[in-house]
Structures are given as structure tokens and as C-alpha cells.
Amino acid sequence: MTDIDKPINFIQQIINADLESGRVTDVVTRFPPEPNGYLHIGHAKSICLNFGLASQYNGQCNLRFDDTNPEKEDQAFVDAIIKDVRWLGYDWQGEPCYASNYFDQLYLWAVTLIKENRAYVCELDAQQMREFRGTLTEAGVNSPFRDRPAEESLALLEKMRIGLADEGSMTLRAKIDMASANINLRDPVLYRIKKMAHQRTGDKWNIYPSYDFAHGQEDAIEGVTHSICTLEFAANRPLYEWFTANLPLPSIPRQYEFGRLKLNYTITSKRKLKQLVDEKHVSGWDDPRMPTISGLRRRGVSARSIRNFCDSLAVAKTDGIVDVAQFEHFVRDDLNISAKRAMCVLKPLLVTLTNFSGQEQVKIEAKNHPNRDDMGSRVINFSEQFYIDQADFSEDTSLSRKKFKRLVIGDYVRLRSAFIVRADDVVKNAAGDIVEVIASLVPNTVGQDAPEGIKARGVIHWVDAVSAVDCAVNIYDRLFNQADPDQGDQHFLEHLNPDSLKVVTGCKAEAILEGSIAGDHYQFEREGYFTRDTSDAASPVFNCTIGLRDNWKA
Ligand code: ATP
Ligand code: MG
Image (tube, rainbow, N blue to C red; front, side, top):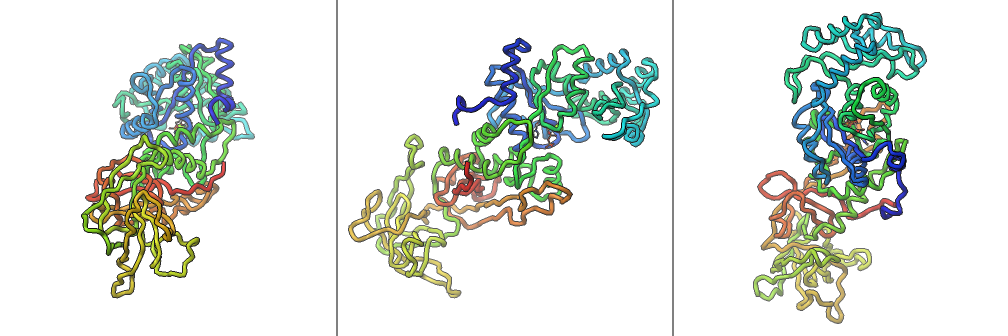
């Protein structure tokens, strides 16, 4: 589907109407991560949507850190998020924005609310606060501190701010409606005491604003016109609007909610991903099995395929579970077009030619992509010995040509981009395993049809023994062996797939792969798509991004 055919989503409809009515003249969005973990594939949907809308409407999208809770946040997460958003292909004007840039202003607005009798300092403890809040079916009860004079609240807020009140002893609450059907409006907390240094503001604050008090006000300060968040915030919207109605904000943003991206076999919760990291179920946030942006990058997934996938998703007002195979389809689709071809033998079996002419090495020219001349070609050595995959050879001469299109004793196979060869004999070790195949080549068959009477069973990949690079390969399976690891009361850790990583050592790669770097994408012919791992192991390690077959039907 081209962009022109694509029906516009409900947010684009809203924006179009807003531009038409003049409610807004420029579109400003934001992507507001909390720096308490790494970004995952779910965030990518929000990034592509927010930055995508800004670009479509010639507007602006801010990267804004919602850093209101120093307890869980870290500069390392800020740095990783910046790197990931950039890598996905997006940029923003100037420095990233931070909620913490607005702490002074937020505090002044809190004071305004108190002065206007719309907020008060409450000294109920957490337990009492829960009891007074009521339930979905029962109204809450007013706090005994609700009607205290504004001066008293102002003095207490100041005490909270400068660190003279204990954590948990008081909060600042909005005075809205303890009987509201929407629990978010039952005098929500605006500030809580946290005597904790903040990664950006240091020891300046002993109180930190709640998400609800911060978010919409940050939007207003930045002139955000369309503040797009996920559905679980729908019930917070009336509160968002209460602030825009009751504070002298420089602009009036509006909040819209869309469905979160959920993928089967995948977890998209930072909290749970953090647990996987902290408890060492994976090697880190960028473990190639993780659905994090950094993990996907290390695995060899291209930024373009993530963008293409996100663009294909419905922006809807309901949550839906997307089949991870749909994501894989986009990964494969992009790599099929963009990855260079190369050869790597995972389970090597040595083949020795008995009729190699002795002209030392023959240079073979191989195209880097079967249908893209712009990707050029490379020269590979061909010599007396080379490796093929153990699975590509059989002694069983009764195997039909149709069933086994590989090398069989007495029969022919074509080596990709090179000669046709025939297997003549095998060498076995004491245990009876085949350790070498003795073969002969059919002269003049590079780039040429087989001579009369000779028919290759198929085409197999190979790696020249003289110039081969020793390497290891990581093959991944799903991290979870259940489609919904995250559902119900079952714990996601119980569904970890014990076989999600298979390390294959002793592989032989074509010489060109020695100089590859992480982020170069290759199709190892007949094996799958691979990229160099970031590890600095003595010999190269390649990560299998994905296999060649796609079973997902659009
Ligand atoms: P998590 O539950 O993983 O911690 P979060 O919503 O708390 O996610 P934030 O850092 O607050 O994480 O998210 C930044 C932005 O990304 C928010 O606007 C949020 O709504 C959006 N977002 C997070 N997860 C998803 C998802 N799975 N699909 C779409 N958008 C998401
Ligand atoms: Mg959040």
C-alpha cells in the first residue's frame, strides 16, 4: 500500500480538522519517555507516530524526558534513549527537553492552585489516603485537611520543598471532587516528598511532581498541540483538562489516546524487561533476544524495517495483539533488499579436489546481490580445498535428486557462483564420522552451463579453505515459548524459552566477513540474515537476525 492509498488514521483526522478550524496553525507533538529503562518495540510505535506526524505536517516533535521520579531514573537511560531515537532515524530541534527543566514553573503553578483554593497540603498517610479514596462503586471521603486555609498549605508546601517534612508525611493534592465517578479526579496528588537527588537538578528539590501534574503542563510550556499517549491514560484525560482549565498556561494542548503495541511472544513493559536484565536472564538491555531497540539493532534488525512495521500498524482506539511474525516479515523484507550476500558454513565439512589444476587459487567473482547490480561484486578465492555444510552432503546414493538437491557420492552439485563438482569418496575417522569428502571439479563451469550429460542436483554454499575466517554464530529463538507470556497471574519468567540462544562455534566464513562491522547486514546464503556482533571476541561473532523463510500471510 502506498501512502496515498492508506486511509488516514483518527489522529490525522483530528489534526486535519484542527488545522481547518484554526484551533492550531502548526502541529507540535512530543515523544515523552521516562528514563527508567531502554526503549522497546512498543515505544517505536509511539516514536514513529509522533515524529511521523510532525514530519507529515511540517511541524515539530520534541524528545522530552519525563524525568519526574529520580528513584528509578538514570542518566545512562537518557543517553541510551537519545541514541535509539536517533538510530531509528528521527531528530528534534535543539537539545532534548526535560520535565525537570520546568520544575520551577510547576512549583509556581502549584502555589497558584493553593492560592485559588484549588489545592491543599494533606497529611493523610498512604494507607489512610487509600481508605479515603473510595472505590469504583463508592464515593471517597474528604480529607480532614481539605479545608485548611491557603496560608497554612502554602507554608507546609514550602516546608516540603526545603526538606523540613518527612517522606510520606504529607502531599500536595488538587481539590477536585472526592465523589467523582472518575477516581483520577478524587483529589489527586500533585507533589510528593522524595528526599532524593535528581540526575539533573541535584539536591535542589525534596519534592517531585506527579505524572499527572507534570505531563500536560510540560505539553503546554512546549506548545504541544496534540499530546498523544496510550489508552491507559484515557481516564486521566479529565484531569489533564482540569489543569488546562484551571492554570494560566501559555497554550492549551489536548490529549489523545491510541492503542499500545502488543506483540505475541514478546514483553513490552520496561519494568519486566528490567527484571530480565537485573536477574541476568539475558546478557543486558541490548541482548539480541530483547525486544528493545538496542537489542534489535544488535541482532541486525534495520531501523527501516522497524519504521515500516510501525507504519503498517493501525493507529486505533483499541489495544490489539500483533503477531510477531508480522514484524519478522518486515525485517526479512527489508534485509532481502538491502543485505549483501556472503557465504558462511556453520557446520563445516572439508572437501578436497583431486583434479584441481595446481594453478594455485582461482579468483571467482560473485555478485553481492542477485538483483542489484548497484551493490557490486566481490572476488573470492577458490582453491583445492573448501568447506561445505555437513547437512549438504550424503553418502546415501539412493536419495532422489528431487528430495536431496545437495551433494551425494557419485553425483554433481554446483557451488554458488563457482564450479560444478562431483563427490567421489569420503574419509572417515576412527569413530566412523565423515571428516572429508574427496571430489573433482568439472572444468570451465564457472558462470557456464553444465556440459552435456552432467546435471547438478542443486546449488550449495561453500567457503574456500585457504582464506576462510574462523567465526562463531549466535542463533536465536523466541525468548518466550508462550504466545502470551505476560497474561493473567502466570509469571512471565516461567515461560522463558531455555533454548533461545544457540551458539555455533567453529564456523567458516568467507574472507570478506573478516572486515565486517556491527550494523553491516548480510545474507549468509541459504542460512539467513546476519550481522557482526558488537563483542570484541578474538574471532568474529555473527548474530542471526532472522532466517530466510517467511510464513506470515498479510
Ligand atoms: P512501559 O510500560 O514499558 O514502562 P511506559 O508507557 O511507562 O511503558 P514511557 O517511557 O512512559 O513508558 O513511554 C513513553 C511513550 O511511549 C508514552 O507516550 C507511551 O504511551 C508510549 N508507549 C510505551 N509503550 C508503548 C507501546 N507498547 N505501544 C505504543 N506506545 C507506547
Ligand atoms: Mg509511562
